[in-house]
Image 1 (cartoon, helix red, strand yellow):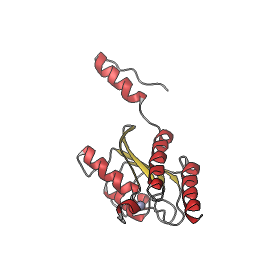
Image 2 (cartoon, helix red, strand yellow):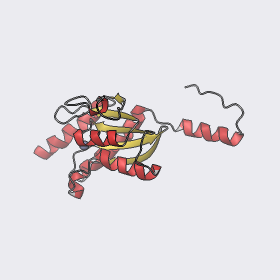
Image 3 (tube, protein in one colour):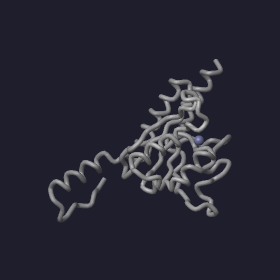
Image 4 (cartoon, protein in one colour):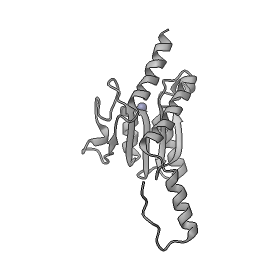
Length: 173
Ligand SMILES: [Zn+2]
């Protein structure tokens, strides 16, 4: 990977730039972290879905589905990670945030992503039963709404789907 040379900046600024770029996560690496989060959900009997929020390729928040654990119908990974990210940033406006989630967001979460003005969405497996970012609806790309979100779909989709299949197979056994 090439990087533009930092001209005219101090050594200190240069080394900080070098460090932040060296830890900048690409989509697949960020999804790997979301998958680790997802597996934590399964430990508590929750459907394994995990999400991370990034700003400039750095993770600022990381959560998993806690619906069973908290007995809370809205405790989806995406909503929890949005709340954490807003607390870190100090604003409800999350235009600088890339949200990476293992499963295509449902209508509730997709609505929250639009409300939060999230800058970009990356998801793993598509959800043919509840997906609202391309499968059943696409709330992220509806010009009638006040914000549209670029989507990258299918990142490590097989791994995310495998985690879900394994969870439900185990529950039925
Ligand atoms: Zn959801």
